[in-house]
Image 1 (cartoon, rainbow, N blue to C red):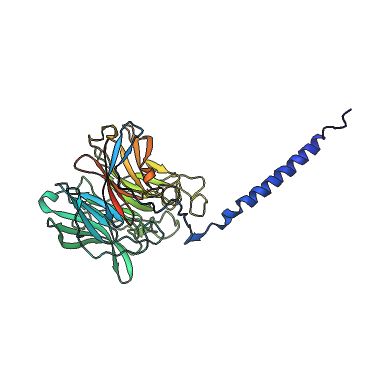
Image 2: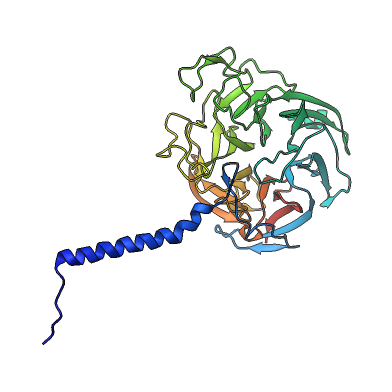
Length: 426
C-alpha cells in the first residue's frame, strides 16, 4: 500500500509561493548586471559590437518587399563624414562634409580638391554626445539657373561659442565666392540644421537646441526667412507675445519674428512634398519617438512637453506617451532609428517605389552599427500603410538620401570612410 499522499492545498500554495519567490530572487540576480550600464552625460554608453564595419566595394544586390529588385553601386567611399547632397542642373553632385568643406562628384568621379566656403567649426565624433558639425545642409536657390546661388547651413564659432548660421554663396563652376552670412542663430541653437526652399520662395531653417518652447529663441524651431535673410511680413508670430508652454505662470515673451513653428527637439531633415508643396521635417526623439512631421504655420509640436519616446535612463518622457494638445507626427519610430535626411521618390527608374518616402537612419534602438534606409508607403491621404528596412546588412550610418536628376536614389554614409551609394534597378 502506498504511503504517499497529496499535500493540503495550503501547503501546495506555500510551496508555490516559495518557488516563485526563489525564482524572482534568481532573476533579480541574473538581471543585476543591467544596474551597471555605464552612462556618459546622462546617456547610456552604447555597445560597439556591430559598429565600425567597413563597407565592401560592391555592387550589392537585393530583393525587396514590393518586388523592386535593386543593385547598390558604390560611387565613392573617399569622403569624410559627409552630411548632405545637392545636385546641380547638369548632374554634378555637391556633398558637404562635417569637417567644413564641399566635395564635387562629376560624371561619377570624386574630384580631388575640396571647396571651402565660410569658416565652419566642428568637434567631437559624429554619432557621439557633444559632436558639433561644421558644414551641414546645402540647397540651390529656386532661380539657380539665373543666379548660381547656393545656401549652406553650418556651425559658426565666435567669442568661444557655437552658433548656427546660413551662408549664401555664388557658384563659379568650380568654386564659391561672394560668401555672406544671411542668418545667424542665438547661442542656444545647437546641433544639425537642415534647410529647404519652399514653393513660396522662402528659406526654411529647422533648428535644434534646448529652448524649443521659448518664443524669443531660435532653438528648437522651424524658421522662415527671405532669400536675403530678412523676415517675411506674413510670418505667423510677428508682433505677438506668449507664455512658454513649458513654464506656465511666467511672463509673456515676444516671439522672434522668424519663427514659423516651435516645439522641435532635434531636426535632421527638411523636404517639400512634390504634390502638396507642404514642408515636411524629420526629428529625432530621445530614446525613441523619432518623427516625420508636416510643418504648419504657427503650430506647436510639443517638445519637451510631449513625446512618444523614453528618456535615456529608460523612463517614458511623459507617461502615458502622448501628443495630446500638440501637432502629432505623420510617422513615428519607437525604438528610434535616429532619423536623418529623407526624400520623396517621384522617378520612373524604380517604378514600384514611385510615391514612397525614403528616410535615412543612423542607428536603431541606440545600437551603433544598425544604420539603414527605410521606405515608407502611404495611401492617397498620406497615411502610413507599411514600411521596409533596406541596406541593413551594410551596417552604415545613413546620413542623407536624395533623388538624382537621373531618376535614381543616392545615399551617403556618415562614416570616416564616407560613401556615396547609388540605388538602381537590378
